[in-house]
Image 1 (cartoon, rainbow, N blue to C red):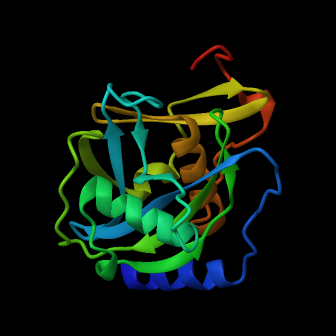
Image 2 (image 1 turned 30 degrees about the vertical axis):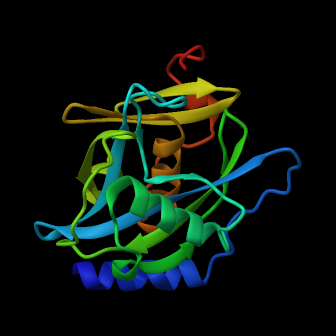
Length: 202
């Protein structure tokens, strides 16, 4: 299947799915941009690594994104604004597919992933105040079994190691759900019995 066919199937599957929504009081709202592009002939995901100076998720791999502001029209607007601020992504170069299943972070945020497609040659510049780097990972990399699992609050979380990066936590959880639902993967998410270690990891 070609990349265009994969993206077409992705859009079709999204149109036939009602994303999971949570109704919880007291949670702050945030959104992240799950940006897919074609890199060296195959589809890839854009990821960033936060600096160690950030107040939360220090030094962790994450999608571009952040807290929803009052002036944001919706979660898509939040994701696009944050991506522009963090990596210089021009919103006009983004083809938004739509919102994915919401997740809740350990810091009390209700996070809405926004799925989108961006050109492979779009100009990106990481904001050094928030990020120490950005990188792309082939989607096919995430179709394989994660390197390890750990358990937090009764939920199994996958972990991948790609080059010098450790992709884990909520970011890995969202990737696993994306791969399972839209790319026919069978990554263990949420089944406690498969957790190998270690419930105390932060």
